[in-house]
Length: 467
Image (cartoon, rainbow, N blue to C red; front, side, top):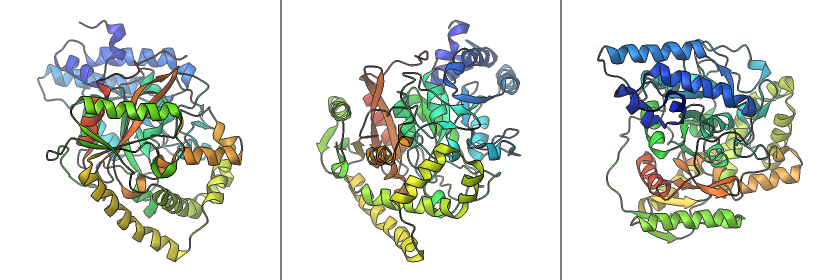
């Protein structure tokens, strides 16, 4: 039997199996997770709201159900975290804002409700930058989150708290959101895995905030962050349960038909600059799949630059319309700087420009769908660089533009609503590195299978103590 004090180290799959077999109770697991949180979170500030009483009550309910011989969910007793930009009943949906410190949710976001129905035990809420705006995590209400591998590099953003917590063993699965890389990049920066699902795969909606404009509706999704691909699979299964309060929800099967084991490798999409260490990780991932019997072809990818430009335009159309007043009132220096740089890079579109962007989306998705029918997996960079020096995006306009260029594949994907998977593969010194896998709509199963085969050849050992 696993020592009680070591239960926090287990993956979600191992934790759920241990609890089902009565090798440990959900209460024991939760106490271990809360103790780990208390031990390491002060150095990280990954979790910014805790709920020990609620967590222990949820764990006790799982134990009681097991004692009665009842069926329990796939995550029964598994400790998880929720991002603070997502409604959780009884807690403030701050989104990293002082303005929303009193915005207490009256009901759960569907993705949170699904995790509860799966038996997951929520142990805390994780940090995000103000407005969930950056690939770095700092705000005026909760402070800055640190990367457990190296406090000098970003933990990523906007789900930086979720990824930092998972890497350090605070919960087995972290909930994140992604409109421009906010699941995929923090996973990369913290040496764990992260899945951005297909648009419509997971039901998610904040009742505290109301409907978003069309850019957010088309591109923003929730997804899991975890230390193993198997845990991403479990997290996806739990989060994807039907909830018709989400009008974009599609009840697509989690497993599709067989596919050819063929992958495309694109080291530098559309000529983006790629660091030698990143290129080495990409080629290594390709070799790992080849060793498992895949055919890997080095080839140019479909466009990223045009989708990235249109993504920024659609996202900023929403923000320009509704965020300027909040930006002024919040007066977060980081958010003010980043938003100003984004506006400078992306001229405001008129109605025709907005309509042209939505029209172009169909053409671009058609191109990507045809490519992914031939190559079910595209291996490409998560970022053109190793994880950035922390807070470097607000140092100067020039540094911001350099970072934006390095993140081309993060921003270029959401417009089409395609799934993307970050697979961590190794370390450069103490700095994590990994690759991004992109697949066809509703074929997360292909990405997860490819991710497992890459993972099998070695990944950074986690959880880790903060360094």
